Image (cartoon, rainbow, N blue to C red; front, side, top):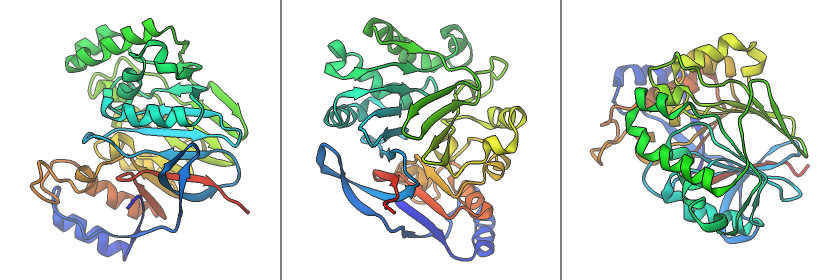
Length: 329
């Protein structure tokens, strides 16, 4: 299922989680939220479950992984068919994403990248390898990565991936733009992106995730917090940088695919009505190498408890494509 809502008694849920332990199974009961399955415009063979949510504005498509890795790939389409992209996923996700963007008219106004990990920029990396991006028109790529020297010092394993990506991006001739803290990208038709932070070179633990850029998106009067993969340190800094009302959002994309991201206190300030899990099934289940539910080291079960405790009313699990669209009345 793609749209999920937790049900059941909260106290029983939390108690079960505590007795289950870090990797234990949780009795999470879910039910499908009501939504209408509709094709993406131009891709009639691809049906996406669309839930009416926004008071006008753009439709937000959230894609599941086409390979096996966790990833983030979110696409916003305006009433006039303008397209804005966030991340895009792994190289495995490129063919699907390229075909979808071409079917939507072959033009991306702005492509945002949250940080320098290939499960976020990998699909774009494959597209820009094509001559003239395979005919796809990309107005600009907005990103802020720390230097290759910093990445080599703090997370050397990322260098073989990010170096050719940046080289190919430079060769592509695409316009690039660095976001600034407090800077606002206004796309019209009730959509804005506000940059909340920049990387901090003093954060050398979980360095590349913590170097991620967060955006507070306003769409049709609703607020959306895109956290990328930021960790505890960047999350705590954001709470110090901004008043609570800047963090508070109707929709929050859970940091680092729903585990080992920000602390619970960050989500308590954000206090979303809807949370989005950019999480494949194996990570949702904490299932390592097919050994079964709860067999892995990941902390998704803890975050499930946090969302229940905070009072989130709708949880969207991206094991299938999903979308939130404007209300019709």
